[in-house]
Image (cartoon, rainbow, N blue to C red; front, side, top):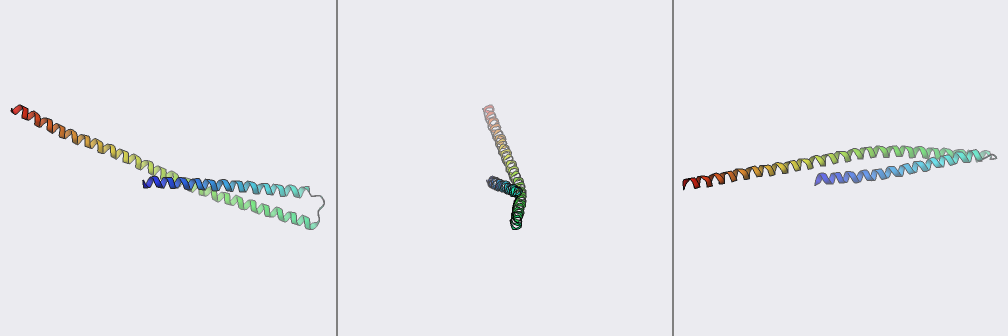
Length: 135
């Protein structure tokens, strides 16, 4: 039961980590879109003052930094997913191994019980045979 719960917990952690990764991917995509829009806007400006050009360049640099931060965050999320996936695989393997061991022990116990019952039945049959022979 404890191993089953550990596997379930690892599965839930993996699912949450995958959701965070998906969010990070969306944020990176949105940041990349903003960078592309900023570059496009800078190219489209023909007549702009020096201050306007500086402002556009600063905005482009901010969007590029935001994109880099989103890429780093996505990298961290991917690493987290890898760790949680490994933990889930480990927990699942442990749970399966213990389930197989439990089943094998159950079968061995049933077999031993059948053997013991066979020995008792043989003794009863032998005793009955001896009694019928002595009469």
